[in-house]
Image (cartoon, rainbow, N blue to C red; front, side):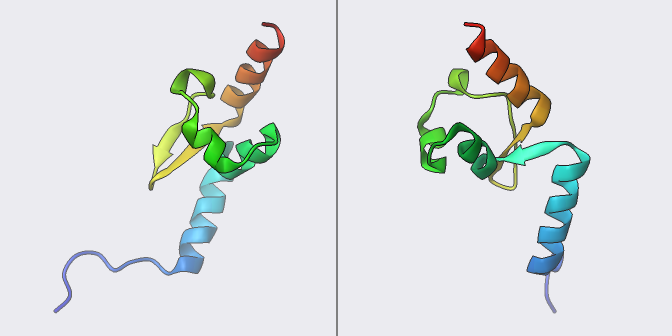
Length: 78
């Protein structure tokens, strides 16, 4: 008899992930890298002080759009 919770199907996971990103107004690390024009690996090497605030869930960093906007404004205004 199997133990624990059954793993969700990949398609279910992707649908739920997209819904959560939309509902909580978040962007992925890959999207942030594209916005900054850098490789996603570059973001992983940056210090936490040189990134917008983020939430880590499921091994992935998710960035609230409001934090990204505030970060960009701080960078532009020196």
